[in-house]
Image (cartoon, rainbow over all chains, first blue to last red; front, side, top):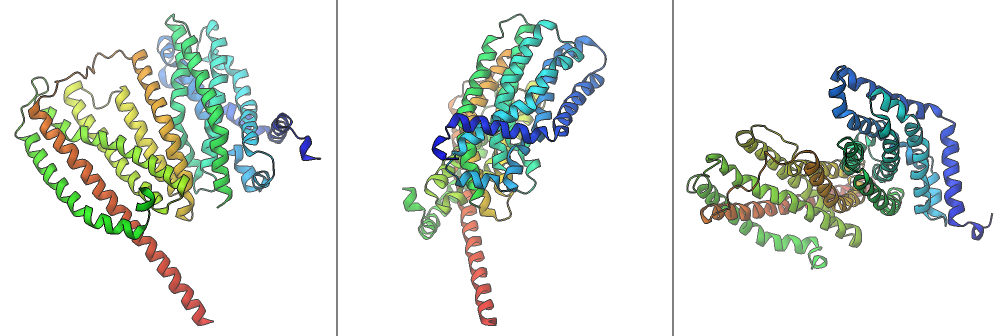
Length: 230
Length: 246
C-alpha cells in the first residue's frame, strides 16, 4: 500500500483493531482480571464483617481499589510483547508516527480491559450494597478514570522496557501518579452519598484524563525511542 | 554556566576548593544551631520541649523538596544537553533526597506522638511527603534496574521530569481530599508565630543542612567520577592484554 494513502485516523483505527484481535485470541487474560477484581470485592466484606453500615463507609473506595489493583498487572503487557518480538522497532523506524500508535494502544487497552470491568461493575456494586442511583455515576467515573489509568500505565510500561524485575518496579512508579485519579474517582460517589453534586469531582476527573491524553503519547514515545536505542 | 561546569576536570578543580568551606560551614552552623536549639532557646508555651524537634524537622523537609527540584533540573540537563555529569548529579542527589524525606517523616511522626497523640495521620502534608519519598524510590529503583547502569539514566531522567509535572497536581489533589474528608480539627498548624530566639537556630540549622547536603552530593559525584575512570582504565588494560595475547 502506498504510504501517502495512509491518514492518521485510518492508522489509529487499524491499530486498535489489531490490538483487539490479538487480545481476543487469549481471552483468559481478561477473564483473570475480572476474577481478580471479583476476589478483591468478595474478600473485603469478609474482612470487615457482615455489617452493612461499616461496608457503606468503604464501598466506593473498595470498588476503585479493586479496579486499580486488578488493572496494574495487565498494564505491563500493553507494549512488552510488541517490544520483545521487535514489532515496536519496526514501527519506530517506519514513517508511521509512534505517538498515534501508542495512543491507539492505550485506547485499545481501555476497550479490552476496562470495558468488561465496567459492564460487570453493577454486579460488584450490588455485592457491596451500593444504591441503584449511584450505579450510573459509578460507571461514568470508572470509565473516565480507567482511561486515564491506561494513559498513565503506558508511560509506566514504557519506562520499564528492558529493565530487570520490571513487573515489581511498575506499581512503585505509577501508584503515585494514580493517586489523584483514585481521590477524585471515589469523590464522585462520595459526594452523592452526602447529598452534594457529583459534577465538580467528575469534571476534575475529566480534566486529569485530558491532561494525560495530551502528555502520555509523547512521553511514552520518547521512552520507547530511548528503549530501542539501547 | 552548566556547560562550563560540565567538564569533569574543571568540576573537580572547583569543588576541591568549595568542599572544605562547605564542610566547615555545615559543622559550625549545625553545632551552633543544635546548641541554640536544644539549650539556649525558650520552650514553646503549648508544646513544651517537643518543639525542639522542629530544628531537625523543618530543614530536612525543605531539603527533601528542594533536592527533588535539583534532581529534576539535572535530569532536564541530561535529557536536553546530554551532559554525563548531569546524570551523575541526579544519581547522587536521589538517595540523599530520599534519606531527607525519610528523616522528615520519622521526625514528624516522633513529633506527632506527643502533640497529636498518634504516630501517623493521613494529613495532606504527611501524605504528600510520603508520595515524594515514593518518587525518589521510583527514581532510584529505575535508574539501577538495567544490566548496564547507563541504560537506566535516560528513562529515570524522564521519570523525574514527569514527577515534577505531577507533584503539584498530586499535592493539590491531596489537599483537596483532606479538606473534603477530614476537617482540620487536630492539625491546626498555626503554632507559635516564631520569635527571634527560635528563628536564629532554625536559620542556622537550615544553612547547616543545606551545606552538608551539597557537601555530600559533591562527594558522591566525585566518587562516581572516579568509579567511571576506574572502569575505563580496567577496560583499557583488558584490551591491552587481549592484544598482547594475540
